[in-house]
Amino acid sequence: LLLEQGLQRAVERRELAVHYQPVLALTGPRAGHAVGAEALLRWRSAELGPVGPDEFIPVAESAGLVNALGDWVLDRVMTDLAGWRARGQVDDDFQVAVNVSAHQLTPVLPGQVAGLLARHGLGARSVGLEVTETAVVEGGTAPQVLAELRDLGVSLLLDDFGTGYSSLSQLQELPFDVVKVDRSFVAGMTRSARDRALVLAVLNLAEALGMAVVAEGVEEREQAEQLRVAGCSAAQGWYFARAVPAAELPAALQQAV
Ligand code: G
Ligand code: G
Ligand code: MN
Ligand code: NA
Image 1 (tube, rainbow, N blue to C red):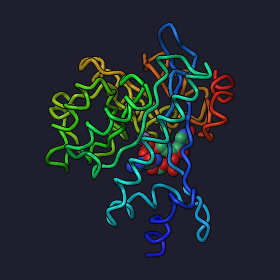
Image 2: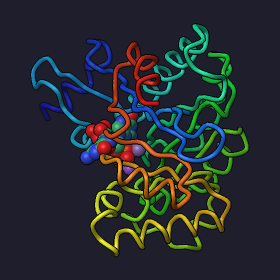
Image 3: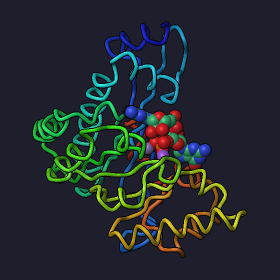
Image 4: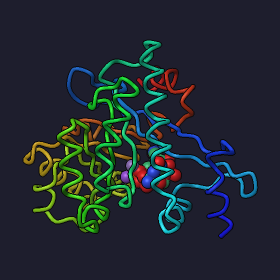
């Protein structure tokens, strides 16, 4: 209840911030360079101190607050991105991926995203939406909503891949552009042959389905190297860069290279 009440006031009290973790290309002409970022919501509550999204997003979902929160995040991200572009701090094809909750995948979302893109003068390709497997399987209207977002030109990323319950047929039917390999598999890949086999299998599967792969949670040089050799197109993780506030991202992008 304390969390719920705090969350209700978090926006007006300016306790929320979006941080950004650089995503680096591992292959292709931009290899070694930051080509995008993942937006990660942060809440510093006056009463509770810093609270992580793992803790407050479920509360926001059950309290019916996650749509308002999600709207705020999308607007914040597009404001930040438009600013970096106006100052020449990122390329036109720099893409920010935003996590969306299953509850946000309603028929109003595509129109909302289109409206925000127009208002901020951004092309649809500059924004990606990260959705978990569970969100897609649960939601009755989710596939239709995803199809409309895809028609807009927004990128769709399947988050935490391998930890949920999506079937291979769903992966093929849903309009995802990118599969994000969960960091639990990346963590084990240099030590466990099984984890390595799993990551390689995801890479093969994605290639067969015409999807790109972003590896999450890369903490060691050896992981980055194995992923690059295996043909993984992009990666993020503490080895390259941590999530930073919007004002610090341009510098973080240079350092991550
Ligand atoms: O940044 P961190 O590792 O604490 O994120 C924990 C979880 O919270 C991740 O699964 C991430 O996808 C989720 N998350 C982070 N920011 C957002 C957000 O803006 N909206 C939603 N729905 N989830 C988020
Ligand atoms: O579920 P999702 O992929 O959206 O979660 C992203 C979360 O992973 C963020 O909370 C972020 O802080 C965290 N994260 C990012 N890079 C690393 C990393 O290299 N190692 C670990 N353990 N967590 C990371
Ligand atoms: Mn994510
Ligand atoms: Na993830």
